[in-house]
Image 1 (tube, rainbow, N blue to C red):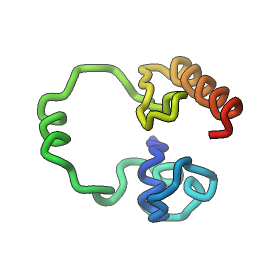
Image 2: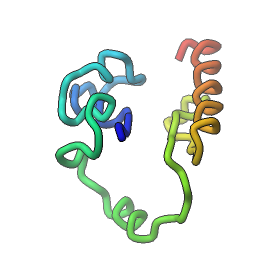
Image 3: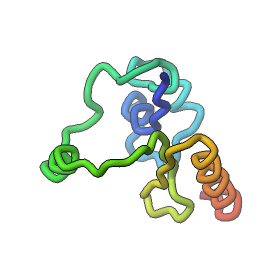
Image 4: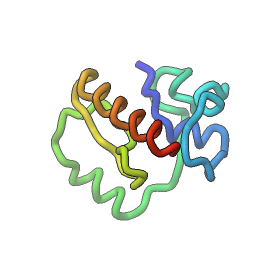
Length: 102
C-alpha cells in the first residue's frame, strides 16, 4: 500500500522549514514520496536517536495504521486504528486550519 507519510515527502523535497505539507510535497517525484510509490522508501529519512531506538525496541502494542496532525499546532499527532476514526481526526485538523489559518 502507499503509506502516504508526510515526513517522507518533506525529506524528498528537502523543504525542512515547511510548517505544512502541500501538493508540492505530495506531487514531488521521488522514490521517497510515499504518496506516489508503494511500500517503504529506499532508505532512512533521518538518523534515529538513542531514545527513538529504545522506543522501537520497547514498542507499545497497538493497532494504529493512521496518523494526522493534532488540531493545536503542537507538532504532535492523533493516531487511529480505522479509516473512519482517521477521517474524524482529519476533519478536526481541517476545521482547526480553517479557523486559525494555520
